[in-house]
Amino acid sequence: MLMQLLTEIRSQISRHVAGGNSCAPMPGVRLVAATAPIAQFRAIYEPGLALIAQGAKRTVLGDKVFNYEAGQYLVVSVDLPILAEVIRASREEPYLVFCMTLKPASIAALLLETSAGNGGTAGAGMAVCDASTELLDPIARLIRLVDHPNDFAVLAPMLEREILYRLLSGPQGNLVRQIGIANSRLSQLSRATSWIRSHYAENLRIDELARISGMSTASFHRHFRTLTAMSPLQYQKQIRLQEARARLISNAKNVAAVGFAVGYGSPSQFSREYSRFFGAPPGQDIKRLRAESEMHRGLV
Image (cartoon, rainbow, N blue to C red; front, side):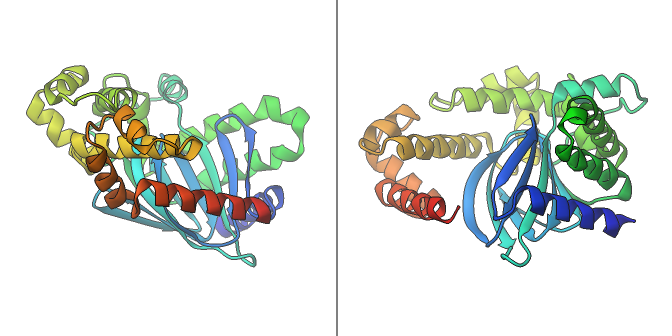
């Protein structure tokens, strides 16, 4: 039954995003396909579920490496800057993924109706697990609804809720539960990661982040590293550099001004850290990204 469901999900995703692309049949849900391996790229994962129906991917968080393939899913519980690559994909057997955002309010509402209210302690903010038949079944039924728009508006939210319930009941249920519990350790640390993402250009004060999280400085340091696999300063640096890259892609005329805008007082320091992080100086990196974008646009 499990392989039958996985085969159906694979077939449905491939049909809806033929040729390698993505579609969003409803807010918070995406179907993704890639017909060739994708080289390492930097991104920020937000809380969500990613089920691989075909192919394989590698994600690096700090010093932790997560490899996952068809029949496995990744759960992310908090905003995390990562390094990722699609390591198995081809035109004959494309990389196929079902993605769903994990919304705190939806999880909290579901927890109110179940006995699964004990959030436990926060571990790493990312985990990989084998998918069960119970999880694959509502995912398959949700994708089937894409072909029936009149039914979709009514039934899709119910299936999204069932998927959340299966996640909560599964091996990573504790990780998912904490997303919806206001006073969980994860929720406390999420206040700090949200603050850093909103104030990345400002000087980081660990004592202030600890206060925002409702923890002592020592406890905050320890739990933050456990959750993100990096220190708060390393987390801020990754957020700064990814924001700088996004700004440069839209306007690469003044590299120094972009560096200053994201919190670097020295152009040389900005260029040095950018090169170390992305593998090339800002101007060279952005030129390459734009060339790749034009190439991909021609293939679609």
